[in-house]
Length: 340
Image (cartoon, rainbow, N blue to C red):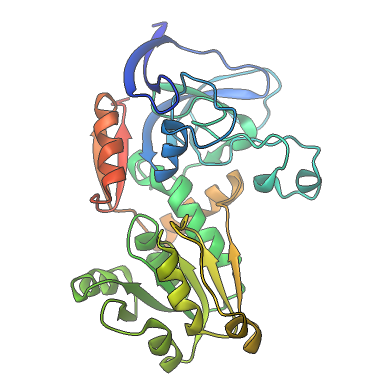
């Protein structure tokens, strides 16, 4: 078989279309992945809407990939055909910028490689990936379970484990959506006193099921005041896209507390300088992680039972799956499967 199916964005701001392509061969340093599942992430809109400079079209989106190595290029060591692997936001790096020379590959300043943006991603039967981008999948996780862990999962898990919070600290998750429902699970299983923040009392049962010990309804309660009643948060991870909602929680941080921004805010944050100065509070961002971070995320999820809640679509319905994700109505991630 020399042909494969792929769903590509034909041009900047253009439609997604199902096409037939030649099955690619892996160059030196790379492997070919037989894709089994690919999560649909809001960041796929970067490709759809041409929000990243230099995207070459047509382009196949997708950076939440789970599959099997089925061909290996020259110069690849440590991987073999038949291994189950995941590929996330990190797809490779330049190796010579200051960030790379310090080992901080995901902040590569020169040539960060991103599946579905700088090269073809996982909305296809097959894709090519650098061996450096591969993460080994635990036996107990299915391809559909793996997909969302490759971006939403590693972003929430990796930000929390690098946040400085320790077991027993008060950690809050702002938003219970595609990122947040995973963040609540990770926070609870890492041993933090976990608080979920969302709009409406109707979300409280879900928050408690996911592992939150406390729930704050931001539509009826002052979030900052409620967090201070609990002692002030060591960390708040902001998974929403509302800059206003993020701004409203900063006062709920304790001394040396940290707001970690994971969602791309719709408007700038408005923060009182005094609020930051008085208690040494800080605001930082977090950009997912490298392949070993993705592998750690999967290992932790397999061990502790963290799972994404997914809606599943076949590859040929990828445009519909994308629109479902963009509508904000999915509960809570959307995953494409190839049937392989």
